[in-house]
Length: 139
Image (cartoon, rainbow, N blue to C red; front, side):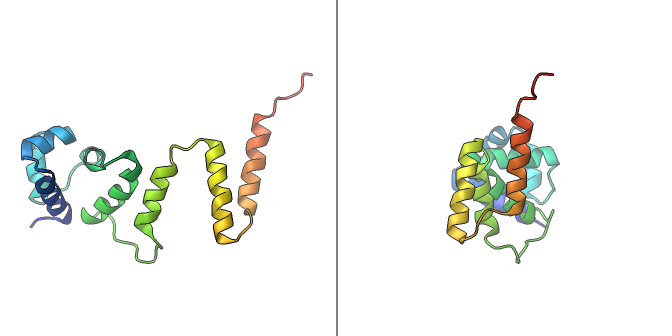
């Protein structure tokens, strides 16, 4: 029986015009591994990560694709109670490379959108980070 992941991989290769060998080269495994996955075998964790890296359009969608493929592979069940699960994963991918000032601006922006003020946990984190960066006085 073909797994959801196997079907996804088969369809993705067809859409991208990839042969088994082309897909294997993209992923960094041999073509037999690709064929086995397409036929329903579960990939190793390393091969799974390679699939995600190989087929994510950009690093900014890697987490969203990984989340989707984990469900298709049967490693976890969908979480229907999560609001915008896929969209949230895309957002996390996009901001994961932000430096601290950009992250702080994003938090302020999110606060303005939700009409909330900064949480106590955020304030404690900022205080802790500021304390770590202060230079101790000479004794």
